[in-house]
Picture 1 (cartoon, rainbow, N blue to C red):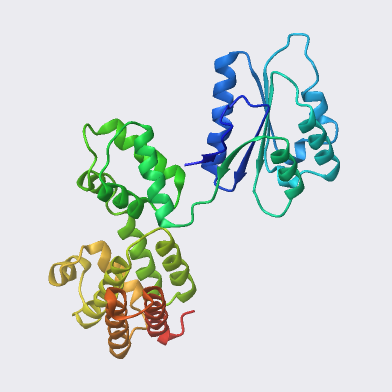
Picture 2: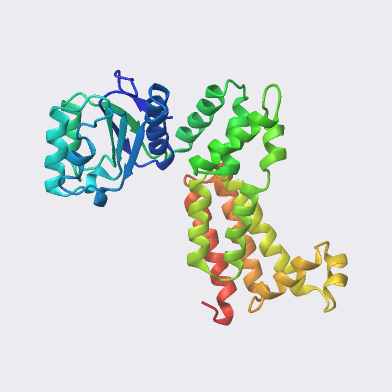
Length: 329
């Protein structure tokens, strides 16, 4: 949830939304627009990118109107404004026009810091919109979304939602809204499971599929994405184990139609076809090496090692190498 300064009037002459979380930046803009249109339904909103705000443009947009209309001027990526345009904006900050609200969206880094400092010095209202990179931040966001909707959700439900959806705040917000609209009473973990189970598992099986296909770089990329979105490491080791065991089972089975093999091995026919494609080049020794790697990773993520992420990376690389014994890259 975006944090605001003590000056929390959306109709303050200048608002600066600082950060790189797109959802929060958009919400900061929407809050100002909604407040302006509540005060004047005919409010004119101009939403500009940094390259659209050329020297002199701000003066045109903020010049007095015969109809004294309320106006909101939004400038995105303000850190990218040209030097001459920055001078215009700084000059405007010293004497903002009544009935006009200027909203500056700034990434918050070193680039364009002079403009941000000038806005703060001028007393601009500030809304912090930081990128939420930590699972704990996303968990707090989900709790805040439920609170804003006046709904109660258990801690376990909030955690399950973060685990299932991942790091995309728009998807998290949408999921909260859907649950709040569909479910009466307290939202618990079982409800979240019914709606969103399978998302994390699907991510885990992507890691496993790329590893047993010998595509180490893609497997590692999928692994890092899964971990960054909150997928539990034990789900990944489970998927890796299933992937390697399926190859071992199919390689030792007698040839036959997918339907027959499916009955014999307890796999759906579509999976037989997929595993057949994945197992080309695998050897019995390779399967043994891969299974040992999975066992070591499983021990590592369940407390036997200091770094579960490293244990998973090591297993993925080992499995991919075993799969590449036939020369596939």
